[in-house]
Length: 213
Image 1: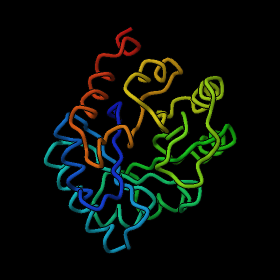
Image 2: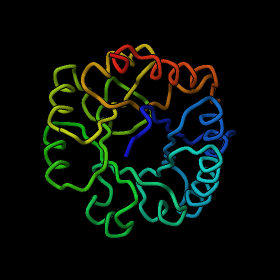
Image 3: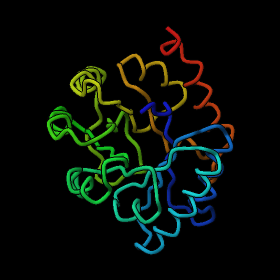
Image 4: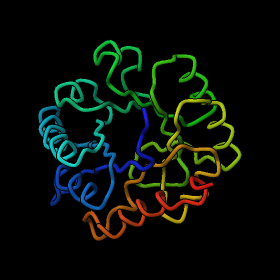
């Protein structure tokens, strides 16, 4: 599969729903959205995912659900992203079947080796690139050499760097061999999705000198 190079992550906001965030991302040119919530109940998360999925379908964007294969299945999402404390990729594949995308989190070389050996995940989220406040129990920040080594170890599995990224980081991240990147915090201003911030990322990726080389 040919993935979009840039993935936007939603977050729990009191005044802006996940579906509204999704619409803002897609409206500014993004074509891959991951819904992520750490506070919604299962039923609330499912409703938010279903609404966000419909927005992505409207824009022809890829839509995945963080943490929950069950929500991904019921929302008819394109895939699920799994962290180290979530259901194993193998069990998720049994639930979701062969066509649904499964992404895995890689915070170390050991994680990369396990993901490759399992042979289940379609892509890997690699990081953190730098400190970010969007995630509790954040893993140790990876330096440039660690990122290069992990991405190399992942081989043909597309790697997406995540963790405190800004648009100015795009060429640097791609130079490590990453397929793309993902962002959350940098897409918002004053607690709202920012079309300007989102488009800066989209434009930076599409015009990257690394991809053009």
